[in-house]
Image 1: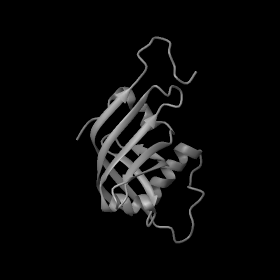
Image 2 (image 1 turned 135 degrees about the vertical axis):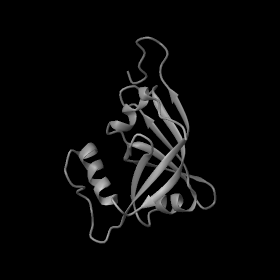
Image 3 (image 1 turned 90 degrees about the vertical axis):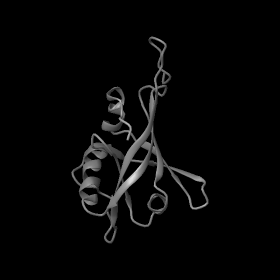
Image 4 (image 1 turned 180 degrees about the horizontal axis):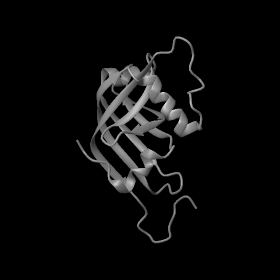
Length: 141
């Protein structure tokens, strides 16, 4: 397992919508924006059972997560990893934690009766980072 550099932890601790790349059954990539959290070791992604990303990650555990700093798009973190577990246990509570971070509310407001949430734990295998090397340069300006 690879470690997330401390210098880039903020990209996983802040409410930044990340891109999640998974593999379709034919091997083609699917990329979707998702909320993500980090427990210090694993990246955590939450989805509804039956959705395409659920099917993709259940079938093939290889994923990539890309977090781009919204304050400087020349600074980013790419994590290539593998799904090491998926569980329904604690998934609703995790989604509420994400809602607090991303929406500032205590409970996820879009939950529908009958929704079954699944929490995916992703182990980082390879980590790539980038930041501007020019003093005073910000690609966002």
